[in-house]
Image (cartoon, rainbow, N blue to C red):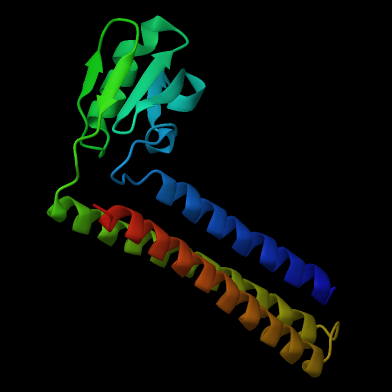
Length: 185
């Protein structure tokens, strides 16, 4: 039973790291990457739909993204979604595709992006600590219901603490990598 609880905790913590990595991929660095826009919500027939489901996204040049919609009628909606996003990019629409040219980042913008990275890493830390709190609460309930002994609970709590440290350090490493990418000129 304790193994199941720990396995579930590890799975949930891994999910927090995966979500963090996806968030960090969407934060702009000096070079173009489809991850910047692929999860952008586009209003498609009244339904918010991720851009990657509506168009192919490629990188023809290091500072440029090319978005080719599968359905040309979605061009205007994609353009609106890009303009209303916090990317700060101006789409160039040629009637068949949209080109996004990424200007070089200013020092001030880099610092803002680093702050955003720190915020996302902190959110991941909180998510991981919430998993830890839930697991410890469950273990105390099991002990209270006489399903496990006090010693088993304490050992399991120590294992959960080790897991927590491991995943928090993974989150911090991901944040540091992204920060270095952003600050790279």
